[in-house]
Length: 250
Image 1 (spheres, rainbow, N blue to C red):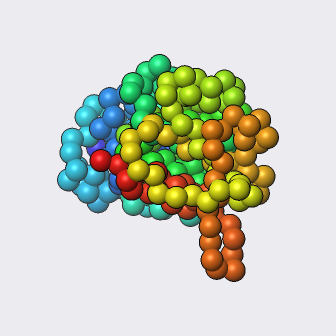
Image 2 (cartoon, one colour):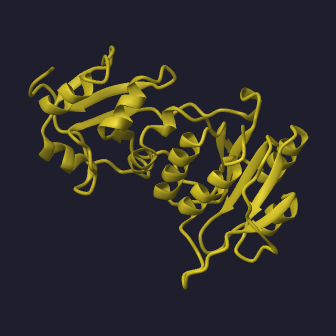
């Protein structure tokens, strides 16, 4: 590993700068993903040793660094565990790349990277085939999103579409039941039995699903809550929806 060979990198700008993934699980998943373009691995000696416990590093260049330098680069709130990997954004998929489709999560203008990352992690855990986002009003890939996803960005296809309405119509032609979630929906969510392919559609906190999105859903359901708080973070709602959608499956 090289020592004192390179000048310090400029502080990371998540909106415009290169993509840095950080944290042991996230970086390990990216290193193991052959679709990833990996530029440089920044690691402390201890972080590199812990990373190697999970597998080979491959041919990515490695730069030795310090926890203080990683804090400066990524920001003091980043839980990097001594490793950061500079990458190109993960390759995006199209609907035609995934067959069959049995379970997908569709996000209607969910913009918070923490929420999108957490939904990716949950969708991956429940065996979803893909997460679909809109090209506009959705976050770019960042270390924050990847850290929240805990490696799911490199396991689960993420599809970006320009017209969500057309995409929902396409999902229907492929035999999927499109199930939308709204706090004012007339029906409550019930566990689903059988193996009907499902597209679970969630909107951003506050504004929820857009009108056109609602109109294209085959069913609209709500999450019934008996406590004084009647709404959930969208990533928590996604976890409940995915559990109910898969509980009765073989």
